[in-house]
Length: 357
Image (tube, rainbow, N blue to C red; front, side):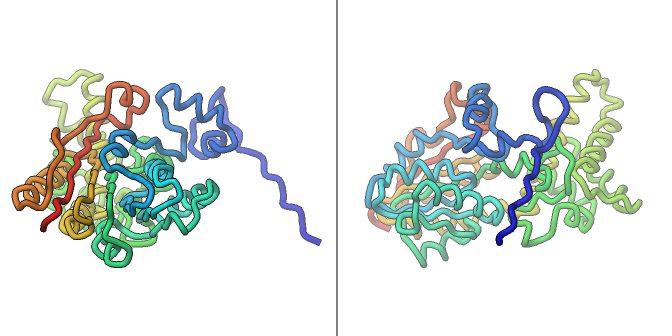
């Protein structure tokens, strides 16, 4: 006789609303608690463990997703864009969706399979979009390609992944925690000059030298940051020490510390996951993975990656390989930014591969 599964009570929390990630059981199960998820979305928030896709209508309009076509979503994430493209395919054609994160691709695959998208119409691939050339050799070339370069809200919100400076957790920051080294080990292996260069190149951090010096000092004292809270404290103290002579008010200092924490975590994430290198390899393969007349849309969230996409499109346009849409960069509407604040920094760039190469 099969044993009955032991009932587990939901996490208890103090106050009216849960604050810790693991306590947000309604948000983490939006399929069951639809009213709670809808309430959070209506207030301009993102339910924990989910992600709101950005500029959906603009992307679908440009990519011209219609039944019978074959496409590639380079960054599956929560599957918002993938689901909308599958709806447009209407059971005819095929979509391939790539994600380097083994944790989130498993969840998204289960959810979309539950919506009826079988392997006849949709194939999820656990891979990095830097390998788009290899993916195209196996399944392409494609009529349309989308690359959303933003970090998924699920990764940011879960403190166990170490992506956010706001919540305490292991200092990891890897898209694929089964590969490479976590951010804590990466920091411990770098010199002061290397850390300063990383913070400057990846995030234009104005306190890069002071923060790099503080991190290296901490490592030498055998207090290398192992958690997000420890790195946040090092950054905050470095900014405070550097700002003593500048006459900042308490409010200005607090804002400077906040922005530096955001930039440091961003720079470290980019370094740990080799994001610029991955984007370069993707852009290099881009002309060959599209059919003549094929369309590509790329969502960027960082000035460095946006410059790379812009220069690539301009070069391919000059070579007569691409036609770049005009205007070549779209921004989300004020209404979308109000409803989804995480869309504010996004830029959408679009291009069409010409018939002749």
